[in-house]
Amino acid sequence: MSNVTNNSGGDQPEGRQDFIRERVKADLAAKKHEKIITRFPPEPNGYLHIGHAKSICLNFGIAREFGGICNLRMDDTNPTKEETEYVDSIQKDVDWIIAGWADQVKAPGVLYASDYFGKFYDYAVELIKSGKAYVCDLSAEEFMAQRGTPTSAGQNSPHRERSVEENLDLFARMRAGEYLDGAKTLRAKIDMASPNIHLRDPALYRIRHAPHHRTGTQWPIYPTYDFAHCLEDSIEGITHSLCTLEFEVHRPLYDWILDSLDVPQPQPRQTEFARLSLNYTVMSKRKLLALVKEGKVNGWDDPRMPTLSGFRRRGVPASAIRTFCETIGVTKFNSLTDVALLEHAVRDVLNKTSPRKFGVLNPIKVVLTNYPEGQSEEVEAINNHEDPEAGMRPMPFGRELFIDAEDFMEVPVPKYFRLKPGGEVRLKYACIIKCEEVVKDDAGKIIELRCTYDEGSKRGGPTSGRKVKGTIHWVSAAGAVDAEVRLYDRLFTVEEPDAGDDGSDYHQFLNPDSLQVVQAKLESSLAEPDPDERYQFERLGYFCVDSDSRPGKLVLNRTITMKDTWAKVAKR
Image (cartoon, rainbow, N blue to C red):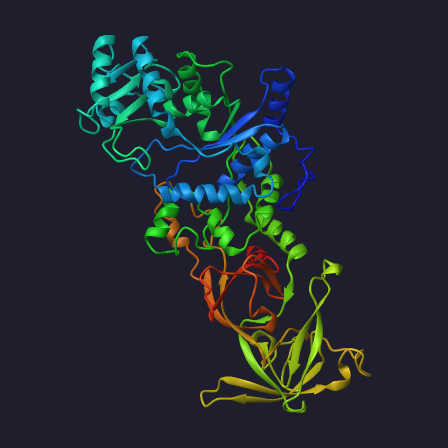
């Protein structure tokens, strides 16, 4: 792994090597370009997910490394699926991922494919005039039926030899909105026998009487992605058009369109790289949208979702995502990446930066019967074991405390070293206590543990060096903060929930325990937590304030556990 920085600003990354960067270096050395211009062109038909983060880091990262710029462009050519909500979310996500160095590389403003609708139309007319495009009356189903297969040639459309004049007239009438959806299509005239099926007279324009989120009803026809993509790159002067591998077979069409038109030189160069696929994750926007609409999750920003807004709400630092993308690198071959790599990056960042706190997720009340009633004191706790300069913080200590139910066992199993009847444990930073009595309600539920404490075992006391095998965390009842804590886990229970081609199988792999809600007790310093901070609850994991929090109702999300609990499951 190269020395990419983990902070939100950071120094210039150095030393990265991959085939795309080598190509950029070669183009600069050959003086093919004066300035590198890349682009990140999402379609605003959903929220960005972790797969998009790889492309964001690659495109903006290359611009940063080579002194260029990267355009954020909305590829909004399909009005039936695109919404302003998605545009806004994309802008927010991109700014979050590249926070700290956006001003160095991000082109001013946001660009839109819809800004070029007029130019696209003019280019289409140019193709018609040169005899390289025609208006076809076949429906999509009829054309597919005669397009052929990868091993057999297709048949020419009966409308393929229309005159230039007729095609110009029909295309103008398409533009005027005279025809119903699907009635006519503008097609490139290439080769119906091409071994590349994408060159068999592909569609360039289709009729779609649908309002557009920016242009309204101004256009009843819209360019296809293949037609618009290369022209957007050309219009913007993109030097390196970086796409995922599924677009490799589209590259000949990308080049054919640009070669067939009078466009600025040098033309953009499309290069493909492997997309990011994570285990235990579904990445399809269509399937993620289905989870949202079906109520399987609570919106696109549900912290269980692989969306960038979900990661942000869960408390994942953007720097951890950047580090993760740097770790997996850029390759030419698709593979399944272990989500544990992402989780490791998250833990690594949070371990270094998160203030330590105490929180009890499943509280049991402890009464120290030999501690004076009405008396209280303070103990000192370490703020961050990784940062000596973080110093110490005071924590209240008194007669009544809370410990976690997992730290007490009435009938202990062998080698159980936490609290048990007649047993002793150390309360971290405080003293040693011994369980003398277990108090239960009429239903047999434990409601209180009555314990004694060894006053001399406090820091600096005569028995402070006395050893016991268990040390647990705790919270003083006086000043304890009540909070709803949401414990998130992986959304799916199997490594490849997305394996089914029809998209129907992944529902059965939803993890029923992906969200658990508990009512917790937190140390008093969290009475007014910083909404932008990430806290480590010692022994439990990392937590952040959720946007559902309100005055008098604190809601926290668990970002990640202290250790990978799934590793144990995988070994079984």
